[in-house]
Length: 400
Ligand code: AMP
Image (spheres, rainbow, N blue to C red):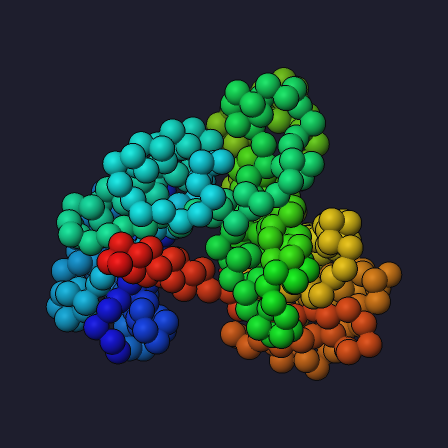
């Protein structure tokens, strides 16, 4: 281990995930999470050198309390003093942030403004930044935005067919998310395919609990499935993705749902969970589908059919496709879903190499199609590494 570490933080509303990345070897040397913050039984879990250590936090513990307990543990492990920079995942950067930035008072004020666009996400990110500013008083902090990679989209991809003033005056447009992951996949695919990034045309399918797909032309995002918020697009664990926009008002007017119930239904009760009436966890869905559970089979069918339709539509902006890439917990591990999706794309000539498809899991990259058709690849994503790299790059620029 070198003595220059980057602390990477990803704050959610009641949780925070973190990692320590060695700035030289780029290896993750510690990771963990604090969960159930603000509830009766919050806890902190740290994974280091193959061991997991779980600590109960005080009831109702805040993000700030979890971070200060974590800082104590990092000191005990003699790691805290080696941290040279902090990288924060920030969900929404609006149109203001097209790349990662060093956090200062002005940036904080701009992030607060952008928060109106992501009230479910950005406030938690800001809480995390403020908590770190209190404990890591002397360290540079960098914000890395999920939306930044997608700022290259043309207007025809990011505009909704709504009154133009809603975009101009209120910023209502497609922003796209998972940008750090799609960016990482682009650079890794360029290496695998031995092509310059600027000449690379791929479709990147990030399939996890949240899922999004991006068309990448000449190394840049030209279209993506998530929109103003991370609710649009593919079927996800509990998020519904694309639905008729009249459904929310139908639920309110005809079924008496409150605004909060609609938000919950679309964000927390839809997707794989809603369709299967079983679980949001793809492994559970697959196991049950294999045993004949009708809801689980339906959930898989809808998930794969909609994903295949998106893949087909993203050949439109690309013209030439160098590879389709699967990533995220599902994309990296589920040979069943990959095969089911590719089977619906035979019109493009995809032909699955079933033994390669079965072998590409648990962190293994690989090509899962035969050479005589278009390529489909599996590449494990690494958002923490991108955040750490940006934090190092911006910190190094400061020193020069
Ligand atoms: P992520 O949000 O990227 O961590 O991905 C979480 C999703 O990946 C969950 O739905 C998991 O069930 C799914 N997943 C993880 N491992 C597997 C696996 N071996 N087979 C199928 N799905 C998996």
